[in-house]
Image 1 (cartoon, chains in turn yellow, cyan):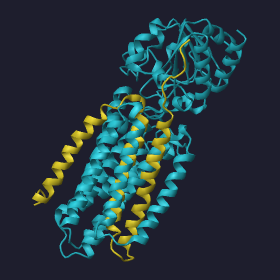
Image 2 (tube, each protein chain N blue to C red; image 1 turned 120 degrees about the horizontal axis):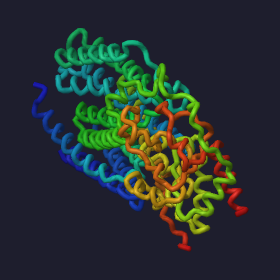
Image 3 (spheres, rainbow over the protein chains, first blue to last red; image 1 turned 180 degrees about the vertical axis):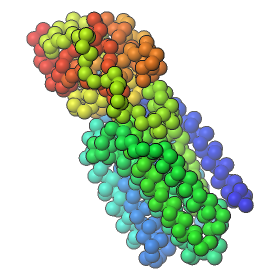
Image 4 (tube, each protein chain N blue to C red; image 1 turned 45 degrees about the vertical axis):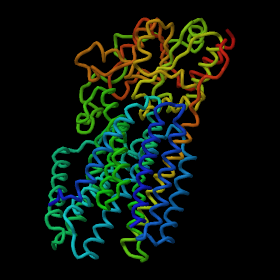
Length: 100
Length: 467
């Protein structure tokens, strides 16, 4: 019923993605944890795709308006997130001054 | 249908770019490139979705994107680095809201426009609304607490765990109804009830948590917004949503776990425990009557530092609040010019977010190879002449090691008390977030400089010029 074929495949994808995510993220050093949070947060703005699919039909209805709102909010998340992460990462530099 | 295949392949590429992008964050040298890679993945996913045949409402969609981009760009460039936790919290809430709206829109579409409302969809819609709404309001409250618009003290109300538990059960009940009879007469009531109740639950869950624990909350909410995006992916049968949501969910959970371990408190204690509320008869409060801390001036501190061979700075939240990171960096670089070896010891929960101190110090141009985390730096303290604690308190408190009934017992700390001598720059002897006294301040080897972090560091710099 709920665990139909159609549900199982996305579930596989989800579980595998969790494993991949764990593996990649566990290797991020503490020094970069703040950009990790803001970067991962930007990726969560992928909800914009959901908004676009919902707002897709060429009509003005509660449904498409909800979709456009979702798009606007998710875009702030995406653009704001990636830009602020970039701004932070720009500041990290090695010690290039000559040793005394 | 070849268009579908192309789109699916493009989504796969986008997901791969996200993973590769996050991989780039494993080192400061490749991090910026990684971020750009992930951003490109997002761009690809968005562009390809525009091409999808069901998406034709270009005017409205572009309007949404344009407004969102403008707002996002303005926020990203105007925000102060010290406000980064608030920013992440807020952005996170917006993402949760987006997922909640998608769930709502899909509910409306499936119940009014489609003849059949499949149960699997109903489940994803219910969960998506729950997670998205809790994330939204939870994040707003977290933002408020960090921005100090809402009291940082935990706001406890009686029976709060019962109320929250009851609310959660009600939500589950409504979700179950939705799944069992999505086309039933009460389905809309169940859905909107679930929606509203989840918004309320978000508020009630976060309000009792103290301001100092907000980093954990934000990390947790970050992972929830990832899960919300995954739910949207299940609803819309969209793999890039599912994968990205899982990545973000994993990131949030891992960071949350790291932080709980660093504070040595279990997650349930943080979320449900009301830690940091003003205790009735605690050992908090001002300095103890029979203990006296040795006080010194900026001049004394400058002398100690100028003649040291090795110095470790221990920055804490107080440094961020006082905007003293530039002064600290300047002092560090002046010391280095005198031939002193300088390190910065960064505790995992220093500042208001994991890694926040690192960002603030990077902003002040401290090279990242001077920033050491707890494991790397703890063995150095016993060989160090002077440790300088600026705006940090609980993370240096030796009670965590020595006193088994202390509230912070077992929490990993920086072994500042092992240094040959210590300078603490702090406005007063007031306790930190844990509400307890810190014996480090009363130790023989410790000299307190009772000043604001920024002024204190600036005065030390001035005094040192004359030495």
